[in-house]
Length: 400
Image 1 (cartoon, one colour):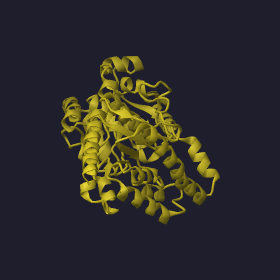
Image 2 (cartoon, rainbow, N blue to C red):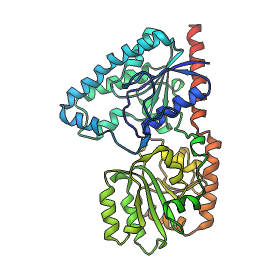
Image 3 (cartoon, helix red, strand yellow):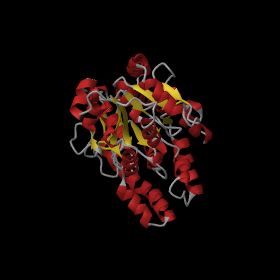
Image 4 (cartoon, rainbow, N blue to C red):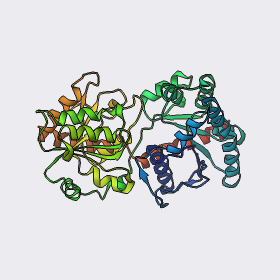
């Protein structure tokens, strides 16, 4: 049994929270002691598995965005860096009581507390990386005011960890480019909690509960944004190529919801497009179970999408772009129907083919379900990998 000291600086209740909470639960379920150090305290936030709470998924961190909007960008970034001192003190306090064997930290920009604690405690640091945040933040929201400082902090965090755990091989390339050797990079993609989806109803039962009997359901889960291209799916549904009984079910919400609903009304499809709004995580499996075709219309180039794992575990026929990160999990005409994202009609052509071929949908769905076991895409599997790495690093540290 190992003592894991996970640390993160995440306040959202979206996919980031799912990753954190599921890894904590998987480690504890496997018999390991875990002490969490986070902005909200040293215990899992409300909503963690087995802890109660709202568990609302698909929402955004509105308060963070409001704070950022009110402050000069440089000041906000300096506050992020200053948080490392506070987090370091919290880590050291927790370590004094808990005596961890390893620190497992979720990377965030300007966050150096795990590295500071590693040097003080002399124990291994495993750094989970879900995005190249300097690159990501420099591309959005007006960029970074202190980009040089951000690059320095990112390089320090990545190169200082004993092992960096990016979620895709594409993301591993970003880590490697910052000077981290291959020997200290271990790709661990996102996973799924099988137990959470084990009681999902049959597709027919799920459709009946949602009032979608007899419909061919196209499904999307999560926080839908304009870059996802869901508007193209609505346009396709109004075309002669789309079967008249197709229905779009969006399990979640997003900033483009109103625009998509207006588009559907304008095209006479108001009764064929449904948004559930933000729902409790426990209700997600019963909704995804209703999908005939699961949609991953676009993807961040380095991401390991959580929705993809949900689609796979419930054995759904998937339509997705043939991007390098998705090709780490999906194979065209094996467990998904992939399209060229550069093609203006690639997604629509794939939808037409899949929605008019029952045999193809069934074959892809079966292979999708088998993918979870074949690639061990579970949180429990990820936890075992982390523990094995931790034990190896701890042994090596003792020999030095």
